[in-house]
Length: 229
Image (cartoon, rainbow, N blue to C red):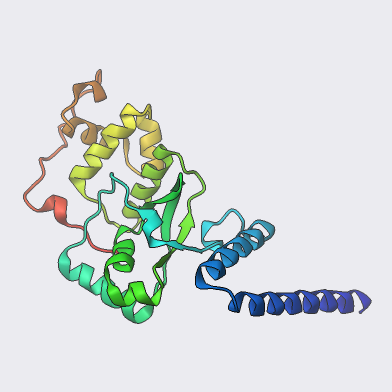
């Protein structure tokens, strides 16, 4: 009973401190509010039981600092893009943009179209005051960013075939083995080989037998993507 009373007292004290901090933050200019809340979130995130989970720490950063990557094999047709904008306008941001820190910028790993809405839709941009919600991936090296982007896309069944070919070729150039690509991107060994073959670069599959299972892309196959909010 004594231990429970001590616990309740500690919790009550922490809540009172949190309420005091919240009142202090409310009186700050917007930019200072955002930065202070981000710092507090990081402190609480590092102290909590879910510090290994990026979604436990959603921060707001200036949309000017969020930039697209140059390798994402994901596209959204105009009707679906309009639906995504409509969804964010009416439901708000329900998913953060996944990013990797690169100098003073945040490079989009997943959520390029959510980023576009926050930057290009006046109603949304004004509502979020020129900021965007982001979470940072745990490993931010280039190869990890690329792999994370493809994992996000493929897990949703969203990826463009032609850009995937280029991305697999780039990972090979960066020293990834077929086994690593297969494991990290969720591909079969034959699928990896076929992407490499279709890249038209013999050095990518030297010493390997050409797969007869490969079928050339049919018109429209590389543009069958669907959006994700």
